[in-house]
Length: 421
Image: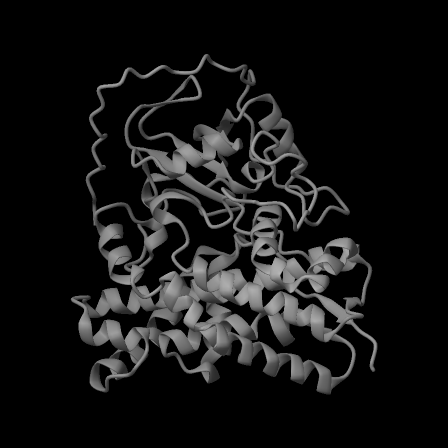
């Protein structure tokens, strides 16, 4: 569906543009290589570009010359500006090895690839179901699920892959219960979600994963249309004006989004804490620090590291003109390490008040499930550290396999060990 761009609000105040900053003489390409031995830091080239200028010309793999934004203020401005579109078919893909030619429009229900008013309709429909109060009501259930998996780890004895044994199943169980999806089907839809998050899969493979997830969700939606259920999908099936196609697409989108991101934050967050023992001990000593620690980990790690927008009209930003049709790549990870916003940004400091970080995005596309993610992380991380005081990596840090090929950064596996009592 095509949407008209949101008109700019009228203003009577004069607009003063900042003086142009120095720019590179040649367009850059997106830095993607992370320094060896630095699994938590963004690619080094991003900091160098940000220090020179928060907005530079960038050449995309398909030859398009657009922009790369790395400064916190610049990235935040674009995320909150309705003159920039999120529609996939308007953007150019920033990573090498991606799809060739124009991108297809977002599948029905994929809110990340939509603009207003279509996005607004879905957002309003779902916002009341992901409120802070409602998500906090899930806290006790999250504690129960977490305790069950810690008990299972303890029974197995020291040594496990924390991704498979702890980080993945907790958010999977929570989102399945919230949506009303049978957890027994998790292998089927987790594989599809993993494929959709990969940067280097063939278009045919990505399409097959999307179709597979939609077919699975279509069967589930049909069942909920026939027999009402007390869960989010059941509510939507019975109470909303969504078409069958919209409900299927939206259900698949919520399921995939709820599986991967929080699982990676639990695993990658644990990894970061284990190689920063002083921070680990601070959290063990003061569990009340957990909410603040979660915000700092979201800033420091920024696992949803990059997003893309396209200008719907000419926009003046940082003293430069972004022309209509030009794509802007937003490096959220570089923005969250901007020293102008966060002093000493390359240090993990759980006592930092990391308010204003962009780990959940900003603007109308800010993560719908952020409050649920906060509950899961605030419960799971302290509970893990408390249950296993001697928890440690079972392999050298440099041998932990990283998800450098994924849209959501993290670890593929996290081998850990602990001492038996």
